[in-house]
Length: 382
Image (cartoon, rainbow, N blue to C red; front, side, top):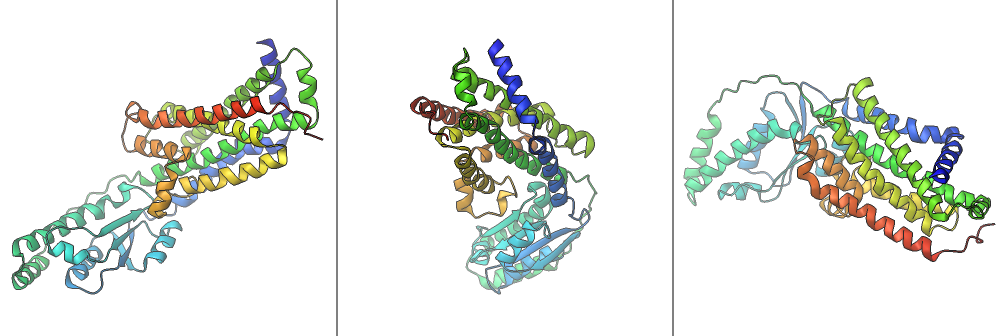
């Protein structure tokens, strides 16, 4: 224990001796919160900005549905193509997008409404207003189609009568929590990425001390290699926990971002992901021959996977194939857990997500241990 405490103190001193490490460990997560506030803080609270993509051509049912959306209160609708819609949503210029796919009108007419997609980066809370009214409207039109069956004239008469009716809708303003939940989701996405980079940078000390022969001198003392690596892991856990606490404190007490989830639960989930990040850092260092190679592997692995998992921007705007790939990444399961906690799920009900994160950590750690055990040559450094 005395050796571990001495090594922990030594690693902490070496880590905080450099100002760049202070910036990476403490300042960058706060910067991530600020970026999230910029992304989600420029939306309009009074008007829902909706982009509409019509892939179904010019027909009465689709035209009528588009007109229905346009006529909704507190909705500003813009017709555009799908590529433009995704760019506008990613840039924060649109709150949501509605895509009428080819065959939409025919399916509604047959009584089986399908062929409509609602795209949003801000969660179901933003789209609930439009989605509920659209479902009601389309459901009524589909009921008319099912009743009229093959009689087109009957359908046209009933559909025209339905469109000419006027319905009164009373709206009550409610506090919009979508923005703060979006900020929380994205802030924790940035934090996850910074945790992974920080873990690798700390674990790289093993390689640096091998390169400058400090590791060889330590091995001639009573300190074993296992104690040395364990000390590095303990420092990683402490500093990652510090990152989590500082980020959550800044979000709640300085920027007043209410995630809707108890801070203890968020901290527990983030710390579990932190174990995965530490295990991955050990894996990268185990396969790297020097610090340059470790840096290259870090950029090759962490940056693309964080992009695919939605750490830097919401995954909802990505194609379905990309979203399927992201399920093989630990960042995806972290963000999905956060999203479900914000939606009202309990931490206990998400045990499968937590087990998957734990499994990622175990697999990475086991591979790293095997690699370390097979790589006994410490003389490869010059």
